[in-house]
Length: 69
Image 1 (tube, rainbow, N blue to C red):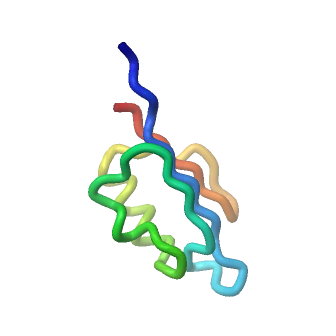
Image 2: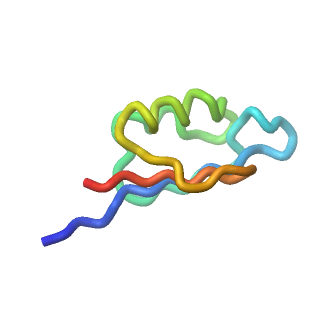
């Protein structure tokens, strides 16, 4: 039985490129949920996701991260 991957989509804020403007979570983001909120620094969210097994697949003003469980 295969499981679906965890996916996080982060869109940077137009007003402040260093902050999260929108975020969409599909699956589990444990233990990074506290870093994934609108207005929070993108840097903190990205570091947490990468440290917990997520891989970034695209980066411009949109970051798409996934993790296979």
